[in-house]
Length: 267
Image: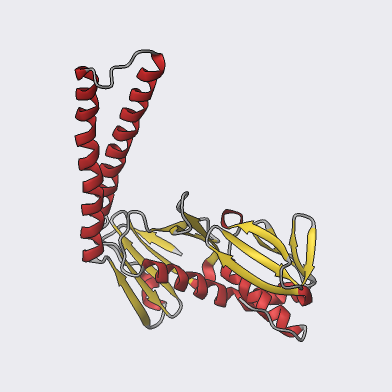
């Protein structure tokens, strides 16, 4: 892993093999994002004077402390949306030249503040972050063994097909790490995937153990990942995505360990 100022391309980038895919900012999505945020800002700007006009005209004249508190809360929320919207637009504009290159052996990211490069085998874990009110991916955190982190922020980085980019990064990191993790399990070591711990015997979560032979399916569902045991309706555990790291590695290990125990697993 290495980072460098935006004007420098790290030497390591030249040893990552053949270029596989180039992800750039989608101009159409950038315009749409800025326009949509601008509309929200315009609505907030228009609503603030309306609230004060209605108050001054007596149409919504406050009669007690509760009314004043309600009006103050509404104005605060509108100002918050206004400031947040302006901040998002500024970040989108600043990151309009963001670019991510995927190579056979790693990735290189160009952002206004840095150039980042990392080999797939240097990634220690990846974590998905979702929007609080909907099961939509907001960001992907990539943590390297050196302690450095890289974040794909879909809230302000309008990269074309960024959801697929996040999937590709997680898949490549998991595929690279899988052989070493299987060797650790075979030798009796434990492997952590956040709140879930993998062993040669099975999956451990909150003092429970589900043997690999009893795993029926591992099903990602936005905020959560459901692990189903034998039996059509048996959900062994529902785990919040925020508790997990290396979700794709967990799926890969489950498929392999289940197959080794003469079974199959649906994912």
